[in-house]
Length: 380
Image (cartoon, rainbow, N blue to C red):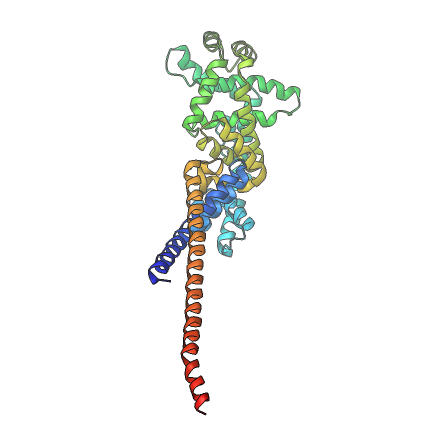
């Protein structure tokens, strides 16, 4: 067989082999992501493994950054994740995290954060959330927020109707909490967290727009204006009754479901994980998936959210792009297999032709030698 037929086959084999080698890592990761897209916990594992391959120091770097920011909870979340993934960490680094967590959980720190949560109404950890929820359970917190925002509404100024709506829902939920002896406490905590995240600007833009629409639909603004104008935090019973009259309970279902999911995140993964979720979420679907992630990963949730952002909850890279990586690798594999087949066939044919040519040459040589042998025998 001519060399000109074998060389192209070998060249094709080399090209497709290189292409497949380059495409395979991307295709493998893309396929894993596509297969895990409906399971936030599995999706986070796949995405984190990919991030770890790109930067082996991602865990230790984030721990150092968390310690520098005095965020003991986040540092501890990364330590927990490293332990789960068998990622080695230095003993000194682990001890520093342990000391920071112990300081964070000290009695003086907890007492200070509780008072801050009760008076100011801003939750940043379990202690401050306890204070904030305590204020809301005693009605003080919700009425405080309604009066604070309501002054602007009564004067015709810009008003945060989301905080008003959350406070209105909170009044009804507070009554239910007392009746059920704490049975809906996670919902109460979820409402408080959403309200707090909104007040400090940590509620994602998409979630803010959605929640704002839901809040406007469930509040009768004229009635609420009148309730706020005549109400006072010093008359909680009368003010609560007036506000509840402006509340359309049948419109609160979506906001209540959101608050329940936020409460689930806070219960399983911690208050700061819930607040991180509210910051990156674009809608209630994201929060619901975060709740599933928190139930599966617990204290590791914050680490996943920090490294992956919204990618820990759902696909942020287009499924089409991921599919193209897989398709490209399949094309390269098909080309490689085809090239192997073609190269094998052509090399086999070349070998058979050479073998046949050698056999024919031997036969020709034997045929030429036969007359000479016959003549020699005759003369002998």
